[in-house]
Amino acid sequence: MSGSRRLAYEFFRCTVFPARNAILAIAAAIWIALSGIAAAHSFTAAILVVGENVEQDLAEAVRGFLLAADERDGHPNETSDGHLGGVDVHVLPLPAEATRLVQELTGSPDEAADVVIVLGPKPADDDAASKYSRASIVLVQALLAEGWNGDDRMEGFITRYRLAYGKEPDPLAASAYHAARRLDVAIRPLDGAGPRDELLEAWQASEVGLPR
Image 1 (cartoon, rainbow, N blue to C red):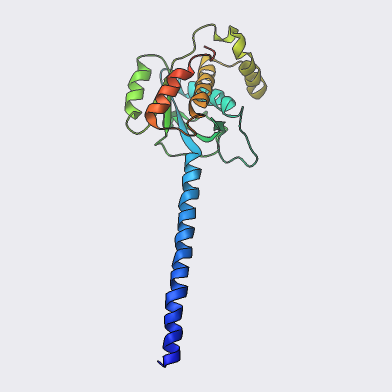
Image 2: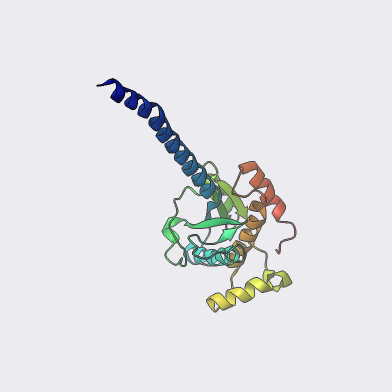
């Protein structure tokens, strides 16, 4: 290689290669950052129903939950099942073998949900909660007490449910709606479904002031 060619090669190696590597590093950093933002602004909420008539109850619970998830923060070209706390939420109905009657969900998220909301009678709900407590943040929602449909604060939900489904909501739909509203309040200041301790504390505090 001649002296001039060697000088040209050394110049190319010392300037172009580092610049290319720097560009690749910047692109990788941007991709990682954007991936982190996307992950932080979506989460999966499993709705786990226990007790008798699980198929029917699960379908009703999903309907009630979706009504709450559709109340705020919507935007065009939705790719999620709605929003809670300003964050996209993907709904996972559980148990998986009881989803035959569930409709209107956008996708099929993995079973490792960020949050599992347990609905059903005690002690079955506590037993179910323990099964998921290692992999997910488990939030137990008690079924609303008899007379919930006479609470003035539930009128908006009852009206929307009638318009959407052409019938009266049952206690599972109302309880899931209530749980979704609590989750909306709990997640909003955290900007996501975590950290665990903060979300659990916010979930407990969210019961105050919401309709029972």
